[in-house]
Every structure is written in structure tokens, then in C-alpha cells.
Length: 242
Image (cartoon, rainbow, N blue to C red; front, side):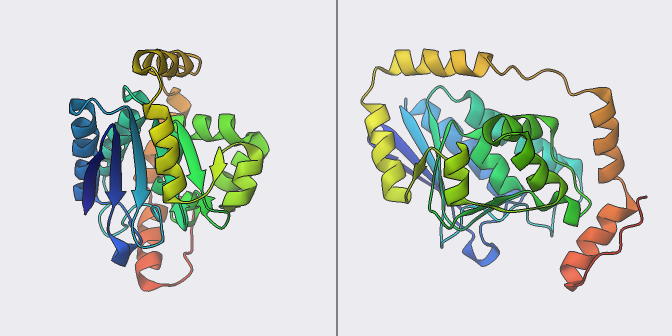
């Protein structure tokens, strides 16, 4: 489900659930946590995160995300990518939706194919994402684009994401690995220190109480149950705001 390949000083981590377009469940999140730990223990100087079968990650596996334990596990992985003592690169092709976009923006850098698709379709399901993800996405691609992604569920093509600065290079996995090799050849203590400095320019403040309340309302709502049921039954949901 999660493949780990140490290629010299570069760690390659692959989400491999092609039958689910690499959607995340509890087991895959545990695998990603383990992979981040292995990369740190191996003194990796860069990590590339990608998906198998033509997609990066299509989001959360909706057959098992009805509880906040999934959200907590996802948040640990996002923090792990952000705080890893080496640069992390998301190599994106195909869908990077919902939790897939969250994984991508948690990485330091993104390489994507022109036809990759970023998006956060939470409003189609009755879900909410954490406040840090909203902040991070807005800082990377601008308030207007972020509002379109979050409030209207609009998807952002890879080429447009590159133009906006969300994606740093256009290309595939080989391009991401090549960039990681270049980074791995640089002075590791300098890179590590500069990553820390960059992270400190965007501190993670406590989530405001108003957002916490909104998050809890969404995750305990009838609308969430309706959204999940509609997804499974392949029909349009009828949200009632309760």
C-alpha cells in the first residue's frame, strides 16, 4: 500500500492503491508515518512522495473516514512532511484531490504534469479540512484561487498551478527525482536550517475557536452522513444545513 525505496540519499515514497486512485485510509496513513520515520532514520537528504497508477491521491477513502481519528492521523502525516529534517517534494500526476491536495501543499516543493488536477471537494461531501491547510493553500496560490478551490470545489490544472506558483516545476516523477538528487548534493545542514527558517516565517498558530466550532459542526452533521451516503449511492446529495 505504501512503498518505500531508499535511492542513495533520496527516499521515494509511493502510495499504491490504484484501485482506489490512491485514496487514503487509516492503514495508508500509518504507512506514510512509518515511511517518514524510515527516511529520517536513513539520514535522507530529500524525499519524493508520489502515487502509483497515474494518480497522486484522490483524497480520503470515503468508506472509512466517518470519525475524527482519520483527521488526526492525516494531520500527523501533514505535520511530518512539513517538519521533516529534509526537503519533501510531491510528484503529482492525475488527481490530487482533497487529502491529496493537502499532502501536496504540506510538502516543501511540488512537481506536476500539466494535466494534473488539484482540488478540495469537501463541500460536495459535507466535510471540512483543517485550518492550516486553508492557510497554506491561500499563501501559495492566492486568496482568489484558494476561495475558488474551497468554496466552489473548482479544480486547478497543473499548468495553471505552475503559473500561480503552487507548483514549482512541470514534469513527471523522473523530473522530481532528478531535482531531489540535486538537492541531496547540497550542504545538508544549510538546507535543513533554511527549511526551518522558512517554516518559521509561517508559524502555525492555534486554530481559532470559531473555526474549531465550524469544524465540529460539519463533522457531526446530518449533511456529512448525507454526503457520504450520496457518494456511495452515486447520486446527488441533498444538503439541509444541519
